Image (cartoon, rainbow, N blue to C red; front, side, top):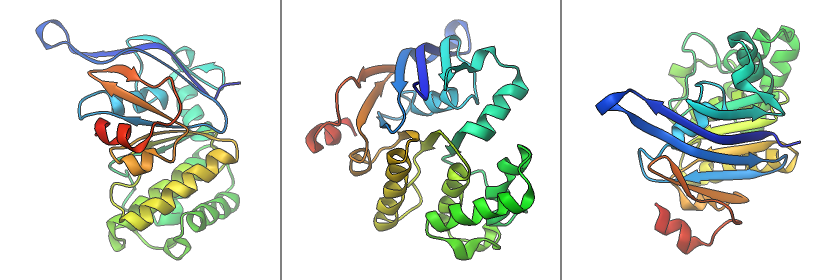
Length: 237
């Protein structure tokens, strides 16, 4: 079964003269173990695509299915439960809670889903170790560098059994070496059976993907073939 299916999805904002077609007639199938990168200029619909795939927004038309479940057919509580259980989301602006430690930030979605605190803590520590920052477990966001905060946000997306990982510029606050380590982590999760959909401006990071989708003005302009070569990636930036 495909992890993510987006079938002729569109998302409009506003109306009349102010109508904006953020995403138009977009279709995508993402299978277990598959890593897809999304590239395109600013305003092309990349972040809209991720918010729809993650159930953070609803399409104007079309369907979004995660592991066979139509997100549009679920009540709000059902969509929230699906996000907590099956979808890991790395936000571009991180969205860490300042009053919680790194471990508590990573634990929170799991605890909200009814996982006991001790088990959630174990999963959080494991996820922090997976992204290379186990020593940050009891540190607050204000005591971390931007790169450390980014790793904690990634750990939160990986904790538990997340079958779909959505990442919006996951290496944005990281140096090149750490960015490559993060890509290796995401690639490893896909190799273990998860599916990953990642927005990036970096051609070297898109090269980790199995397939690259190019967006322009809310439409897919390419994305049917395998990972393109470096020259094509550079032209897309």
